[in-house]
Image (cartoon, rainbow, N blue to C red; front, top):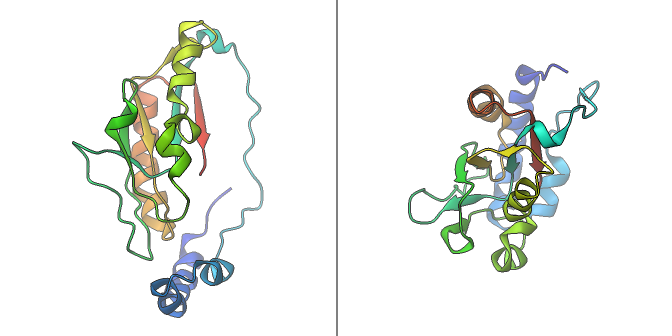
Length: 175
């Protein structure tokens, strides 16, 4: 499933030029309709195999989470979004988490972070030995329109961290 970034770049540049006035006016529905989606020829689906009770799990959310006292929030102003990633420790408490994502209602997640980042449910599964191990670090993205830096820089960095942690299964929690 190769992604043709060279094809995407000019389409994206045109989309930005045409959509910026609507973006600044808050007309998100209009610009989303025009976004140059990358459509793959096929999804590299791999059915889950193995025994969760002996495997290592990690989680990634696109909820825009960050640690209020030690990490900068994601850029929620730029039309390009923010391709960076934040590390969220397994021991995080609700009050330590900030949400920087301009494209969804945060109210329920602010009451219970498990709605978009079910860390406490995963810890319960680990304690009950349903899953073998939960990594000490998990991850969050925010919204990203310019996928080039995401695909060429951020995702390879994330993959290297996951490999270093010995992750067998990654749970993706899209928002």
